[in-house]
Image 1: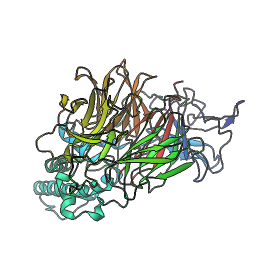
Image 2 (image 1 turned 120 degrees about the horizontal axis):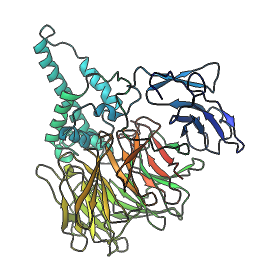
Image 3 (image 1 turned 135 degrees about the horizontal axis):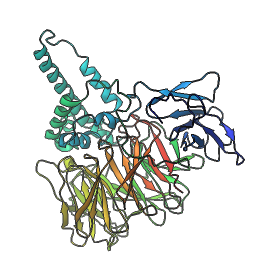
Image 4 (image 1 turned 30 degrees about the vertical axis):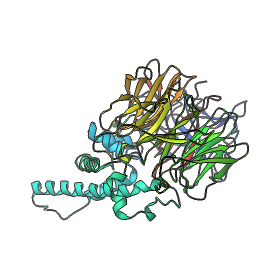
Length: 589
């Protein structure tokens, strides 16, 4: 599309012989079709099925809604979106939407567009690992806060040099305040009614950097970086100032369905399960899991059968379709049987822990060992390996016997146990090595026979090794959350063999998922409102834009039967961003 062409969109709904609703997105004048336009249909609350459906136009500007929509449902609204253009409603034609070039794209770009305007390097990476673990950076509220800093008056207005120094001091102190405040928000990761919530924690504990995901030095580094580099205004952004950086992967067959959850829920992730038509999610805020039927959008909620807060966090199926759930509160680990709708729970308390020692929420059970399909994986002794954020250890649970053990990993000087933020764990294909990542540390593995460190791969500060996956050829893929990269490790040799820069280095890649059928790595981003696809053979990326702002992803599930992707939007704290499950038909089949 030439830049000087004045564009628009006419959605001319027509019925095909197959009774599917189709239309075209056209230029404002004439009949020239516009390709790769996102067309979203929003449905009224209470409508069966998804709350919104998004498709994309083909080269001729034609789009097709899914087959179940022969006509527009009552109350449905269509919107056409393309970066660099804005919508103009034609009141004379309710189903006609028009786009015109937008003089400004500030309201259209993701958080990564603003982060990407700040200097790249270790300090920016530390900002991501310290702050983007919970929410996008800069989120809308963060940008509003920055605008309020710039609005502060009362300095030496008549002296330019003194005023510049005063404003720098104001910025620094203002960002220091927010860094301290965010230490308290760390406790928002705990569920309702938790003894570890902010309401139950005294102020000195809440402010102690040794009990936090970033230490005192990192907090000061973040405050200084923001003071020096946060844009003084985010109210405007010129067209062409941001791009996702990769070719679009979507096709005219791509369909994105979004299913609304309650605003009070925080469904951190959702997965498919073998032999099940449902999707299963973990609601960390409300101590329950959810069953979602993607056919009609119906949900059923299952509280954890425990007499205190649990905080279901990570959920993964096994080959039989049972759901395994780690929980961040009260040291719980559970298995849910969808057939009987019954729980089996284990308390992760090692036998050598004295009875007088209180475990409480301190273990912070996080991820469990998985295979290349994202399913629970056990070692030769039948044990599941777990990451324990609170103690920077790996735990093991033998479900058959209930035996629990904690195993030491490695540490870096200046970091407390929780500062390391131990995160993901993946078993090697032969089960002899339990790989783990530390967001503020390195990647390594424990020999599963001896529980001793077998391999360690060092990363610069701020790289942010986060969620990992393995492929069918013995490679470990690691999302480098802070540096905006994906790295590939030969598990047998214990060596990094390739590192791939994301097209948008400010995207904050939170997780990777291996797709065996496509021989590709799917990259879930926290900051870019997009998913990237990395072709394993060529090392090239394509991008799949998500239809909603603040589309914060913590995990991607790949449904091996249908090839679809499933995820959720999961900003902390609950209610601070959209609360939806997302199901994506990739459109390449």
